[in-house]
Structures are given as structure tokens and as C-alpha cells.
Image (cartoon, rainbow, N blue to C red):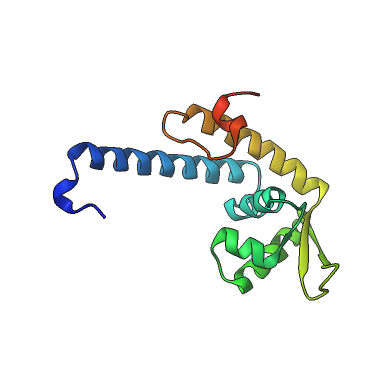
Length: 142
């Protein structure tokens, strides 16, 4: 770990700029979700369901991990999304105690709209952010 004496002014400037741009992106995301009639957390639930690697659903536990919240908080959040018609739940195939959360057509519609807005915003911040393993975001391909 660097000691304070090895940090230069430019290091602090780079960290400050990164945090500033990160906060700008989060604020953009929150406002975009609200303008679409969703809460920012609803958008994130939809995103993490669709974006979970290797499957077209996510478990409550996976959603909780992705959002860094407690399991019971994820249950309540999924319940609100279900009530809004954004997701459905079904028991797991192998373990019926597991709950699989799937997007509805309405959830897909909201997610695609918001993800498109987010992709455009990330591209505009390409000088600040590089999204690992997502070449479509980094390369500027449509």
C-alpha cells in the first residue's frame, strides 16, 4: 500500500475526478429511472436479473448480493417489483426452496429503454470509465 508520502497531487486529482464522474453517472441513473416511472432500485433489480451471467433469471440471493443488501430486503424489493408488474417469481427446478425471479414483458420494456440511455451515457464518459468485458460499451459500436 502506498504511504501518504508517495501520493502526488495528480493522484488525488485522478481519484477526485473518478469519484465525481461516478457520482454524476449514478445521479443520471437515478433520474433516468425516476423519469421512466421506476425507482432506481427497481431498475437495478431488472438490470441484475437480465444481466446475471449464464441464466435468464436471478435468485433472491443473487439479487441481494448484486445490490449488496440483506436477503429480506431483496425479498421486499422483489415483492414491490412484482406488484408493479415488472417481475414474476417461480420455484427453482432443482431446489423448490429457491425462488427464481424473471422479467415480465413490462419489465423488459422498461429495462431496454433505460439500458439504452445508460449505454449512451457511459459512452459519453469513455474518457473516465472503461467497462470491463463489455466491448459494446467500450468500442462505441451500436
